[in-house]
Image (cartoon, rainbow, N blue to C red; front, side, top):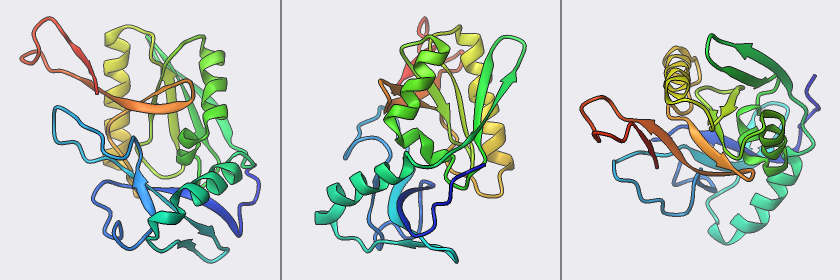
Length: 196
């Protein structure tokens, strides 16, 4: 059961191309100005107050970003989420759910580090395809298993009523550091996986 978040300052992920990006206080999920070798639009981390009736976004005041980011992440640590282990033929996934803000759990470094310990790995791959879920698997596994995880994330995104992001995110030491993209057979001969 999720703890109440009413009237708490919280982060709220928004999909790439979010219409209110200029009006609300927000930042890209990874870095201030990430550079990719392809055009990849990142999801946005917006900040605001979780009111009982609706989420109220803060106005775009960049000078308050550091202060409100810290407050939002502190509030995020107080939330509780349900965890389910999903076992597939060649890999396992932990589904973080049970809260509107379950996808935002990717922004809690301490919470993410617990999964690195639990899965015995030094890097996580986290899918945030839709509102209310974060799908977590080890980044230290066979390319075939990671390819299946990419497909799972894409299918969840395509079927979602509230889609967020179709590309899995790499998390190391609790922080989102990049994206996982698996090249097709006709790309990058001899280098099937590309970490962005």
